[in-house]
Length: 146
Image (cartoon, rainbow, N blue to C red; front, side, top):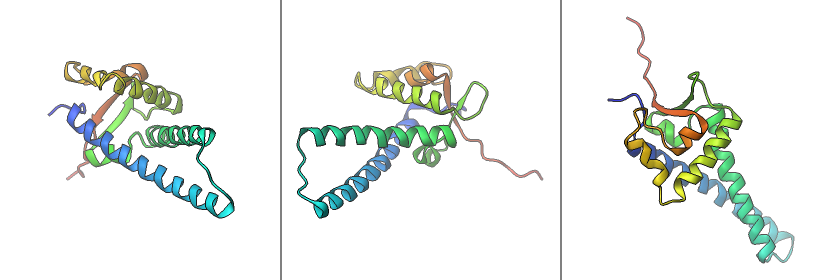
């Protein structure tokens, strides 16, 4: 088994993370809607829709950047035994994580074509990995010394 994360495990991790991020967005949106309905006449006209979209981008983006830069993995990646490392083998910082997020968006836009390099690259890197100079690896379970 390769030490680098493959396309299937990365896809499952991304699906889990997107589901978790959207649960957070939904809960925050419900709280804002509840407060808005209690305070006054809440309407969702164009400016409010734009703000809601920007809030979605902020929450989902923060989810990924926060987990990648602090733990080197998101909850979905942890469930799949994956971790992101930079060239030094450490967690990517905030800037590198933001670049990786932008690369992830670019990888998804053309019908997921940005993930295809994972199938042919020797270190299984996708577009976001090339841009941020990161690699996704399987976590090695630590075995206590005998």
